[in-house]
Length: 120
Image 1 (cartoon, rainbow, N blue to C red):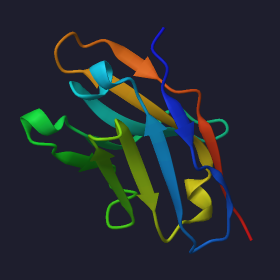
Image 2 (tube, helix red, strand yellow; image 1 turned 90 degrees about the vertical axis):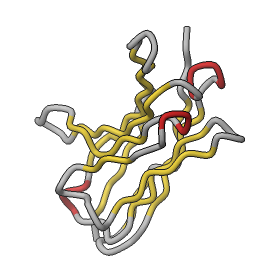
Image 3 (cartoon, rainbow, N blue to C red; image 1 turned 30 degrees about the horizontal axis):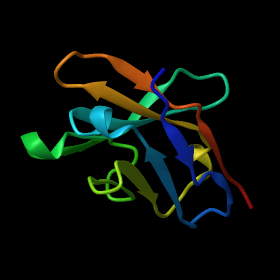
Image 4 (cartoon, rainbow, N blue to C red; image 1 turned 180 degrees about the horizontal axis):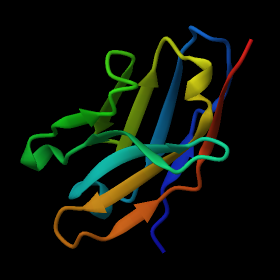
């Protein structure tokens, strides 16, 4: 079973920053679009950001609600994707999930989720 290991969630004050990390098996990471999704209480899971594999350009994509505040990046040497979150708002409070979607097989993998709480 493919395992995506997330870390970095926690409690932060409004206006603060957090960085989430997600490590994936190399065989999956290299050929997958890596993404971050979030699910707030009582709401559906939504896309936050994605980044394509470096072999096809590594283009990133963001939800409008996080543009100019969040940055997704990938470290191919560590098979890890990051989500740098700045200027956090209470509405960013959610469980954040890492996702890997193979560009070859279209197989989809999820992490266990890491909670982020933005509150004073």
